Length: 360
Image (cartoon, rainbow, N blue to C red; front, side, top):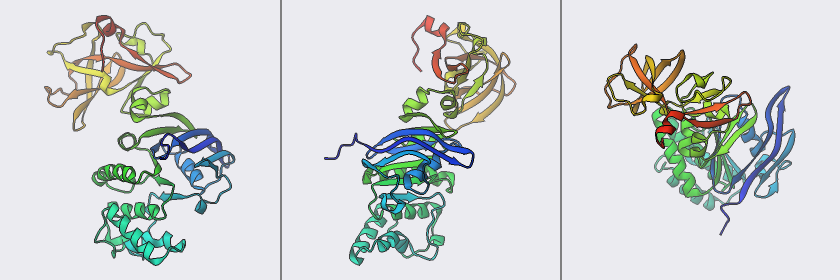
């Protein structure tokens, strides 16, 4: 049995320049066999450059890339055993679904009967049965992406790379395809990396997330680990819908911290209640004024001004509504604090900790 704990893809001290711009800055990480990993970061953070270097479509200026224990720096892209799904599908407009999927197999001179069997297997796998003779312009965006996925899998690659695979698809279909991709990767068992700037997509789909920023790796970990325990200010601010304040010691329960301590606050750690409602932790309550109300489906997100600071908090959809301009009570349970170095640590409200042990 293959060892699922094996580090199948390894990057060591990868550097890449485009002119004077450093797209990859001493990038190192490992990816275990059979895992689905998200490269997550904003535009220009270097995530697509990393993907293209693994694929052999770009060459690192220094550092080493290993796939399956083999150094592939000088191995051409076509011989790395990689399937690549592009953001814009890159399908052949004048080829049918069947011929698009079969293209790589024909190039590799597979026997006709084996090509037919493999294409039919993949069409069944990706749910396109009955659409074999259609052309790309006769398919929906989601169907075209499934064809691109099947075509990438056709030659039985060892690694699957996906560059913003759902970016060109509308929101509802994108949501459906996330679940579909997770299911397909589990069925096929292929080591996969996908690039995205969408944190919800990464959290929902990936086994592991690699956060990139300005060509560097900020943090690596499971979605739960990165969301609940970010290590840097960038990672804390990039995940969720947080707000940032300059002096956390202006808020009750954080007075013990230094004036130089900055903080990032997640909405779920900021409770907003009406003045008429009971409060559990009176020693930690601040007065605030509602500045904005945003319906997010499962909950209400509120922008509240407290002691000159603008915070975001949440309120349950079933709760008594609040109005813009209304005075409310605000309690901050937890914050991610940091100094100028950028490393963060979670800090609980000291007043609450003194009253009882609280788990959010």
